[in-house]
Length: 390
Image (cartoon, rainbow, N blue to C red; front, side, top):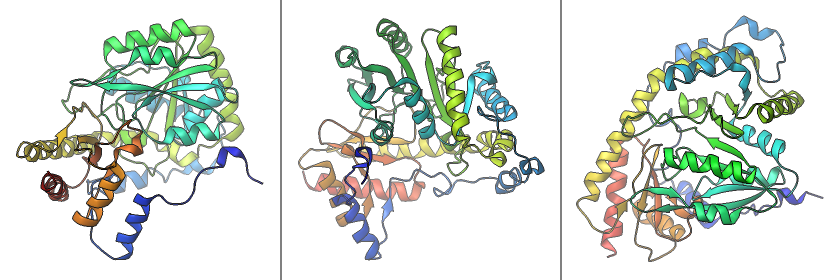
């Protein structure tokens, strides 16, 4: 009765079952997987945010497939103010989420069973998005050697006659590694050589831990490029469903892509008027929330390093940006078993590395958004358990 594309294993895994057991028992758990800034206790301006949705113009229906021009202007203003990029609003297409943006791009570029190259490790959502669009994923590895790098020889070996695009996450989630200037040059040359499009996920772009801004791909003239981002991370507002795809590249391909994407968007018209009309205010909220977020990230990263310096069993891998830290732990059991043990024995919730498709065991991911008091205690419990096992 059902399609093969939704033939997923829907039974909960052991880690999820363990979380449910702990929750049912009513035990208090330190959650080091927090991804919602509001629930992490950061201060917002609720009056400005909620009032921005009370625009009388929202009573009118103005179906613009690429999104209201005023909202696209607001996004272009963000890039001009934050990154010094002078973006044409007509190169933007608004979506309700970056996930929807991916689905539009996959539909634009791929026939059934065509392939897209994706980094490994990376965010686990790609597999579901690809399944729903009848697209195949071909992983290419990120290598760690005093920092993360794209494995270009492996990337080249992954290309087939059915490859249509390369996905990069800038910075990667969960490794926190940005695409370097040299890698950007190589990626453009690689895509030109093989006739591929470049898909760049920049949702965490604004969160470099050293405070030094990293360049966006939003104006990448060398190859057909689709850059994705949105309010969820830029303004810490995942509940306000506004994201976008910014297209760039050589004129013929760029024009054809935008014409086709506009038809795709016109088919769904998923954007709602109140959010689009509120775009200026909601993007402005980043000026309040980003300093608070960056301060939280630095406080927790500093505390983690302080505790790590007092023991030998666990190491932190280098991270340049984003909201997470990656721990290298003794691989004496599977990451899932270790995460379950931490939940049962230390009442701490972390993500095991296999959630992000790490090729081997020995990795845990913790959120740097966690309130500092909880993060300090959670990190202490993790290190106490792991060092006690040595």
